[in-house]
Image 1 (cartoon, rainbow, N blue to C red):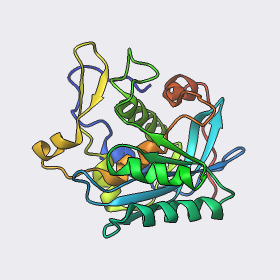
Image 2: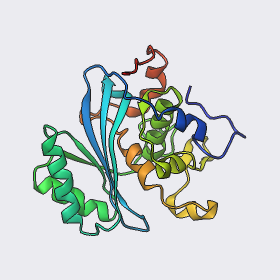
Image 3: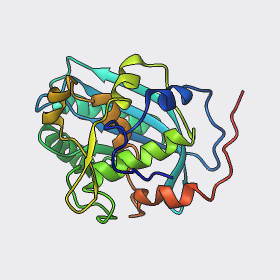
Image 4: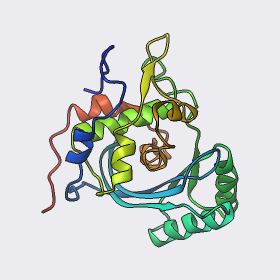
Length: 231
């Protein structure tokens, strides 16, 4: 589960698997709310806010419902975007905010911390927790999302842009055999735009603030019973 053999499709997740997850919300045990944000800048089309309801075991996300997935195409003011995230967190019991902390996102992350928000910056290029399998944390988190999708342990909204982005994530292997998602500046080579919606979902797979490793999803999910659906 979650392994990638040499020679298979260059896209990480199939459209068919994504569409199977456009389903009723799952029944979660001890659900927690998490906000994930991808901040526009450096060629990105939109800022995106994602609100997820997640179930964790030992800090690992094992099932999730996407409650909100909103794009903000005209919001260039990072302070305004920071306040939007802060208010959303406050409206949901100060739930944690995971935010892309590279480039423009760093300023937004710093502003949230100044406002004492429950925020943690995510740096996609950071060393993976399992560097033998994953090139960086971006690859590790996308793999965690892939596992949830392939096991249908995530409820996704019916959003065509999201479907297109999730099913068009080019990947390769490093010289050491670690999974690597193509850099965003290479997406144009495939005729693809910046995957803002997919990135926000990927950021939502972050390890918890208790320093647990989201990359362990693969091993943990193999042990779980299927999650029941709410009609």
